[in-house]
Length: 392
Image 1: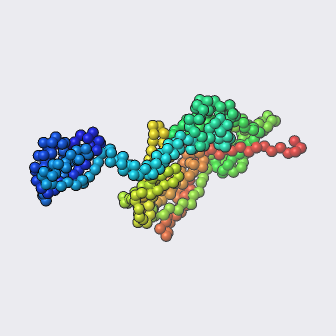
Image 2: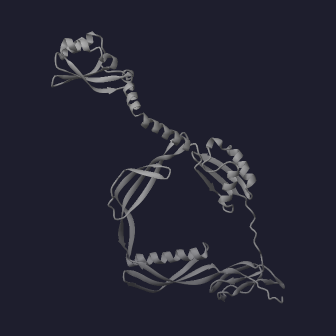
Image 3: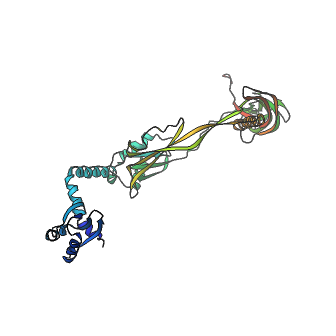
């Protein structure tokens, strides 16, 4: 027969019966109506059983009649738990105080994050928020409503079209959307000049006087579209494309190194309070010559609030360097491809690579050396302001 949970919580004990007539003692207990459970006989003429605390004091006459002796092996239940708790009352008081302080810390603003501000200084936003009652270490229950904070910041900050305030736990997020102002560009008369040597393949002068035509060979800095038209200085506009030649010196190693994970790893666990962390697991040196450490935080939460306390885990993964040997053909192709990417990055996505010619190629000291000439069609026009003489 087993006990109920209510019986255990009201206080129960495990006793060991030895000597005398143990079987007779059990019969006497049952006859007296004493509730016992978890009866376990032992080989050395002993028997364990559980009973309620108030039943223990009714055993004395039964023990005398059967010649048995009992000893208490274990105590469990709410009364004994309260007794142990009282003996450690100072520890309990410290725990309660710690819980109260922790709860108080979760009711404060610890961090204010500002995003979306490019032109307005963060300090100006934080100063305006402080004037509205939002600042670090402010009680969350004393904060104005989010709508009121948003309206107040909108009035105080110039040059914004919208501001939103939200709170997650002990962190407040201020989202700024700055007003879009039309870009003011100072316009002055200018020429369109060539930024590279080349042969013209296309020219269209929207404004200004064209000075070259298709198939003309031009030099860097040469005027393509003049800013003087009809006796007036204008801002030249147009599109000019030309075939341009780019010479690249390419150097590619035949041995390529790459960091990879070996699969060996070690974990460390920390209990953190704010910015303080105490290591609890994973002591000792990982023993890896090279490794990468990944850190993850698992804060305690209360409802939708993230508390500044939780578990931090570090995963240390061993890494190794693998070497891959490239063929000369593969190394050459990789070098040419990187050169093409550089051309497109420097001259725009509308650039077209027409042809390539390897002028020189050799392999020395584990590297491939090449000199490559690329024929490219690209835009070559750039503005050159017209500078007036003081006498004009």
